[in-house]
Image (cartoon, rainbow, N blue to C red; front, top):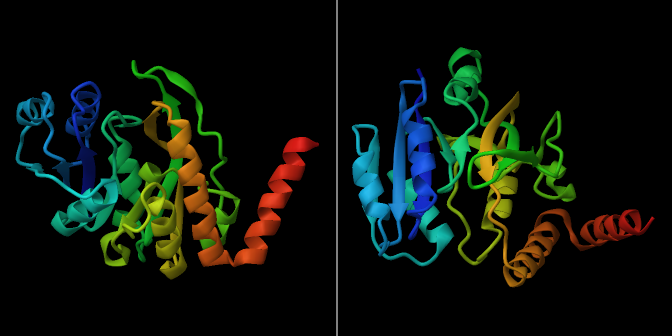
Length: 242
């Protein structure tokens, strides 16, 4: 049975973390670990971690150099065959979701390098709002992200042998670059055809959203070239107008 490493990054997450901890603890799949990288929280985040402490969990609490630096720490601590990231406030869709994720890894003659699925958007009470705006493609490859990040980062599960560290030169969109880099190397990408994640709709500040979009454009130029990226964005504008 293949092991899954679930990595959660926290900082002063007392209002959202318990949902995530409970969701992980209630999973029916036996072989997983939950790694929590805390940025030295000053609220009751650590109290919640202690409350749910068990032999599948390991955690550290120390200062870091931002979100993607913390994610890289999680990668270094992970010992699973596959790896996924679950934000504080996000949950697995159901109690058997890890079983759904790991089915192909455990039963296929050649396990996939990437496993992915759908994402539901929920509010702070866990109530379903809508499916993620960008449509998850039936078949995924590295060129798919020319249209944007079509698969939510949390619903993008990677074989540990394929994993690379995040590029911390990007402050807001290193996950976009990370997914493309990994897809470029992958030969087998498996669509579960299942909703895997409940994603907490917290909203993003306008300033950060603008900075994130600028970074994503730079990342697309890096991977797909300047002309191709420009033409795709021109088409987005034309489609939006007409």
